[in-house]
Length: 306
Image (tube, rainbow, N blue to C red):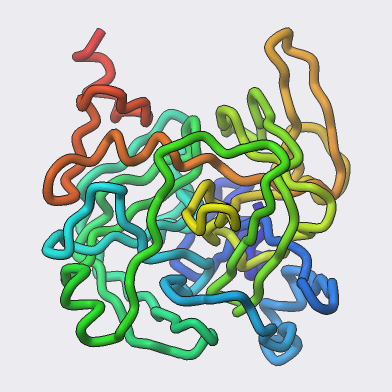
């Protein structure tokens, strides 16, 4: 999980400090035009050395956070009158990385997001009133509830939300990783899936593996992964094996059903999002007990359910 602020990553790894919203953690994809891949440290210390914006198919609906990328999203059954939702990684949470097994729900938040238009210009600012759901267990996601509805957002900015697909990603499909933080699009394909992806203390299930073209960089964490066949969000970008190490921070490893470990240096990964819609009911309300919802539950709720 790459961060714009490498020092913050080190502090988190040592358990010395919590993130404060200045840490981007994500696997990014290679620049469609240049393939340039600035290091996380360079991006943090020398913002002016960031890659120049690249003309993308569309940035409409993506957002830039202080430390990561994200997107304004809707469930397949969301209505215009529902409060908007922004999706990014769990490791992009402003209060720090959730620990393994930790699930956060309905936590107050005042976070702001820069909403982008199709050409990566600023369409407006979105504000959250709470963290609806955040975890790094089984997946790596944070979902924020906004102070405005989709209709209000579209009326003031002209931007409609991206739709989360309700079906599993497809191997071989072309995908775009769209980073609002860097204003860059990374294009590759779904290479396959990791039964389990382990990084440090965290384990993620059925992760999407990118083909080599997507060499993601720090700051692209939380970027929506869009299936170009459907135009819908099929996953959320989150990490890359940077140094060829096994299962360490910034070096995720794949673990198969028999426990065999595979290391793929330079390979980027994303977490599937098709299971999220089943956990949201009428009015974009989170219901972790809903039929078909497989998202991890807070420990107290999980214990009560047993």
